[in-house]
Image 1 (cartoon, rainbow, N blue to C red):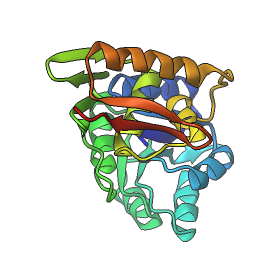
Image 2: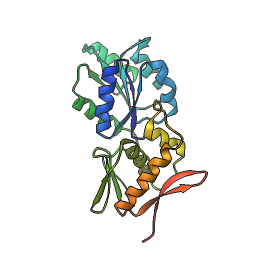
Image 3: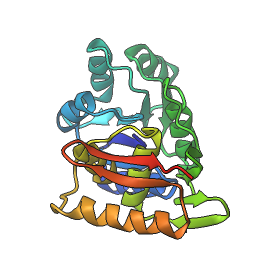
Image 4: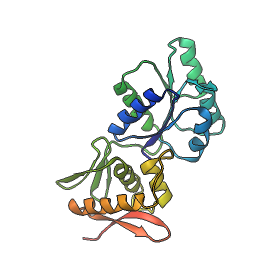
Length: 226
């Protein structure tokens, strides 16, 4: 999943981070406090988590410590308004993988997030490929041969999910969560509309793998014989 979680109670900062990462092809689910973030964090395979230390109702360190205690190894970046050595040490000892002091440049945050997303065993590449079809998250596009087509944000997350599956079937719910996350209301036919558009775009670039519906199972990219 090319999606991260952001636990940040400052609405304006959360919006700026969400938009900045989305522009780089990284989708974000935003949670205002540790309580609302807890269950999604343990139930969904986020690529990384950004946690503000100063959360309402408790220290962000406690959320990270709780994740580690429960065996969750998702990479965590701690945001803090404090720059003291002791605070940085506390964050790392609690289980955070990295920290960033406010105020920060969005470019630096993006670089830190990308570095964390490369840490899991399933490497998050900047260019994904399956059966001659290439998806570039940062460019928001997919390509086959010399032909390239742009992708809307939801379409991009769906294609990332399908390409990473390497021909395996992906359940409908997984694709919906990849495309729209947990906080956005999705109409019943939203995924069908997105898949219809993706099939047209795959045809437009003469892509070899086709997007198929395996009834009762889910969806997959299938490499058509030439």
